[in-house]
Amino acid sequence: MGKLNDSLLSGSSGRTGRLVVANVSGTEILRARPRKRTGQATPKQLLVQTRMTQAYNFLSAYKAFAKDYFGKRLGMRSRFNQAMTNVLDAYKLDFLTLTIVPAYSEIEFAQGSLLAANPTALTATVAGSFTIDWFNNAAGNPEREIDELQVLYYGVDEKKPLFLENAGLRADGTIDIPVAPTLQGKTLHVWMAFRSTVLMEASTSAYVGMVLLI
Image 1 (cartoon, rainbow, N blue to C red):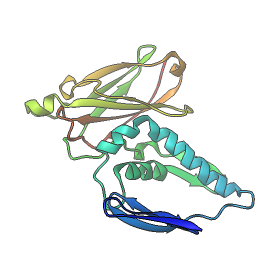
Image 2 (image 1 turned 180 degrees about the horizontal axis):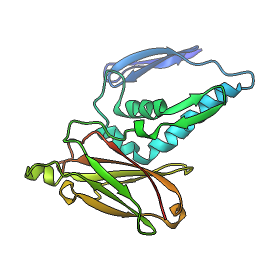
Image 3 (image 1 turned 180 degrees about the vertical axis):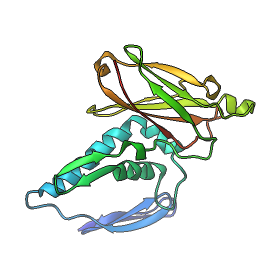
């Protein structure tokens, strides 16, 4: 038994047996539903599932931002899909040791053509905060001087990172960011990007580095 709806406005949707018809951004997709697993998952399957969970938790911090500023839609692949693929690729699977080893420097939270961010230093000399320095490459262009700073930072072993939108301007060249007491003594991984004030374009994010909070 199954049901298939056909509409001139929204296209076809529904399912019959294991076949599913879906309308994705105006394109009709026919696919087979996966069969229900009858046996217990293998250690390798569990590792793959764990990676998916960890990657989604990481991306959830900047999910809304990625939907608007992670590249451009490529066929059936949305910006969100591309951002998820980026994180999944960075979470390396070691099937010999059954571990996940993240390559944080490969993660990007934004992809775009806006003038790039050029971080120059990442320090933590004051308790409860860290400092990012960057080169102001606006070259006197008033529109680029006021590009807004976006910052992502992640405490090792935390469930997900924290995302700060519009934390400063490109012209500032530096920023001090306070952190929660629960992060003191932890190692942070930090990323930055810029977004134009008209909210239409972003730069590709840059991995700033890692720093130990005091």
